[in-house]
Length: 128
Image 1 (cartoon, one colour):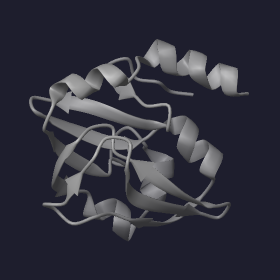
Image 2 (cartoon, rainbow, N blue to C red):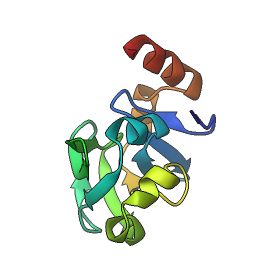
Image 3 (cartoon, rainbow, N blue to C red):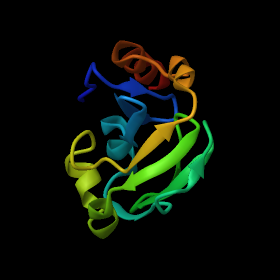
Image 4 (cartoon, one colour):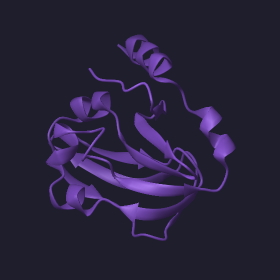
């Protein structure tokens, strides 16, 4: 499995890439693999306020329906329409074209609640 070192990770299996005062958010390779084939994704519109550790999206696979949690508090500034039109992109490229939203952070300090690639790999190993 792939765990890019430049990303932050949550224990809910989201990843976050920091770009200035914004983050790009998606689900991890581990999460998409556990879900199986993703068939539907519901994302909120641009301008939606999100709160740390509160669901902002719903993802449906052939196995289950799951929530996607916001890693920070802020406002959604961009939505990846490509993944709502073709959710299988998340299975194919979870860290690239499979990103979900961009969020303008209210408090960059919330990033300290996320974990590194190495810590996430240890967390996954402990879950098995």
